Length: 149
Image (cartoon, rainbow, N blue to C red):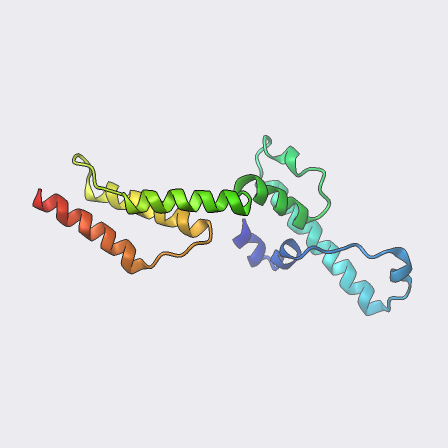
C-alpha cells in the first residue's frame, strides 16, 4: 500500500498530518496559497480513496469515519503494527526465534531457508535490521550440521 501511494505521489499527505486552516486565515491567502491548499486536499482525498479500496469490508469500518489519509493510516498502523512496546516485544520474539532456529530432521533445505527468510523479513518489517552475512551464516551452519549428522 505504501508503495502504491508513493508511486502516485501521495505518500507525503499520508505521512504528514495536514491541519485544515481556519476560514479567517484562508481569507488572507493569495491565489497561489489557495491553489496549493486545493492540491493538498485533492491528494488527501485520492490517498484516502486508495486506502479505502485496499481494505476488506471487515476492516473498512475502522477507518470509514476518518477524513484524512493520515488519520486512516495511523489507525491501521496502530491496529496492525502495534505500539512501540508491542513492536519491541514482537522483535524480541522474532530474534529469539531466529537465534534458536534449527533445521528439522525431515525438513528440506528449501523449507528451512523459507523459514529463515520469513523470520528475517518479519524482523525487517518491524524496523530492525539484520545483516545478510548473519542470515547466510545461520543457514550455512544449520545445513552443515545436518550434513554431519
